[in-house]
Image (cartoon, rainbow, N blue to C red; front, side, top):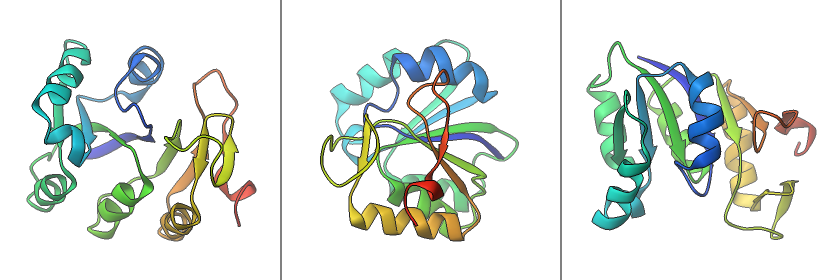
Length: 158
C-alpha cells in the first residue's frame, strides 16, 4: 500500500481535486475519510457520483479507515486520501500509515484562526496537530491548486 497523495479539503472530492490533482496522484483508489459524509447516504451517493470511472473508491468514517489499514485491507494499492481535518491524518500516522506529504487546500473556517492562504485557515488546535504531523516526518504544504506555488507550512507556523 502506498499513499500517493493526501489532501485536506473542506469539499473533499470536487472539481479541482478531480481535474487537477487526481491525474497527478497516480492512484488506484480515492479514499474519502469523513464521518459525516460516510454516515449520510445522500451525501455519500453524491460523492460516489463525482468519482471518475477507473478508480476504486472508499467513503468511510475514520474508525473504519483505521480498522482497514490495521488489517492491511489496501495491500498493494496506491491511494489518494481526502479528509477535512489534520486530525484524520494524525490518526493514520499514529497507526503507521506512511504519509510522506500532506497538502492543505481549502478549509471550512475562512477568516478565522491562523491564515495559511486566502482559502485556508486553521485553529490553534489544528496548528498543534499539524506540528505533530510534521514531527512524525510528514511534510505539509499549503496549495489550493497545482497552478499555485506550494508553501511549506513550517514557513507559516512554527
